Image 1: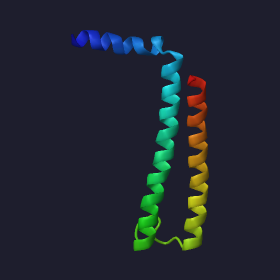
Image 2 (image 1 turned 90 degrees about the vertical axis):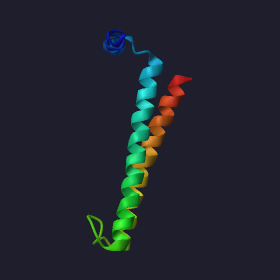
Image 3 (image 1 turned 120 degrees about the horizontal axis):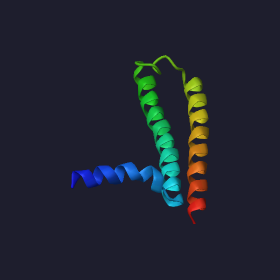
Image 4 (image 1 turned 30 degrees about the vertical axis):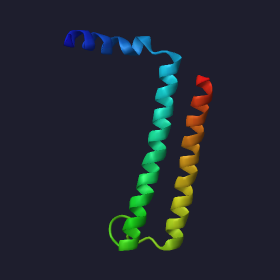
Length: 88
């Protein structure tokens, strides 16, 4: 039975449908957006506590960094939306 699973796993790249490719693209875009959100959360915590890589950032610099990362998140969400649209 394990051999069947291994053989099926080897065949996956050859059998990827458009749906699977689109789902993978959406997943990657969502992964990036979530990564940015988590980095922002931790950076804000570090700044508030004055520790870590973001500990010495002033409020203005932190706001600018968050604005840039929000832009990156929007781009990732737009890419996921485009992928969703291609699936329909």
